[in-house]
Length: 171
Length: 170
Image (cartoon, rainbow over all chains, first blue to last red; front, side, top):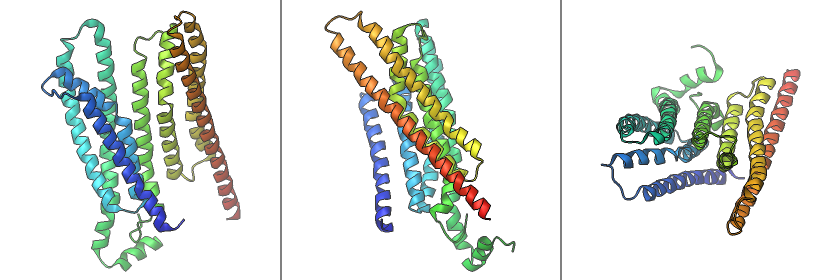
């Protein structure tokens, strides 16, 4: 296969990832309609249902990272690092609001239903910190990979950098 | 990373740990969702076992995807790792997935047959249809797990042989 056609084929993965995200977002919107963000129970349900779609978002994430790596696109990797940073902030804020809502909701639930509430909250309490940790880690790593090249290019005459990097000699 | 080039070959080991992390998160999400299905824990009740088996079967493709992503990333990350460790890492998830899939098929066959006798004639076709679908799904799942696991083990064996030959020639 010619390198050009392989690149074209690989870039289809971006479309696949976009379709996965679009499918999940529209499905979530239809499930949560009519929107009542002022209601406690609706907010809790929205958070719980949204978190059930984590796997597909991660699959799309893996596809985009792999494609950007394969297509040698440092700018995309840099943009992805920003996306992961924003995701980490949103997840932390969301977890804080979810914790407050759960504490408030606990008082209005019958005792028989409490184990189910605790189980759902425990799942989110386990998953979200792991996702935040991963997002921060990915942000740092992707930023280093995406931004590192731009910095090195601007630094000075390439011959000087290459000679040290390629031969492994200490300058 | 080399300052002169931005080749995927240079980048792959740098990206591979992210692949392992993503695979772990996908598996964690699926396992915790499965944990939610265990609510009302009562393994003595056929209905509970059937529910868990059905929940598990619906998650096999994604668990398999996570396993594949994790192992592929691990292989890229540690190309010169010791043979025993690498084989163990490949074996564990596939053995667990195979054992769980066989258990799910057994539960759906045996418990499903037991539940069948207590159903009315109107309910029977729907339950039989569901059981056939689950059994076919389970068998396809087991075959996929075994096929991918076997392929991975073989590729690990071939890689180790190549490394040994290279080492001897040096």
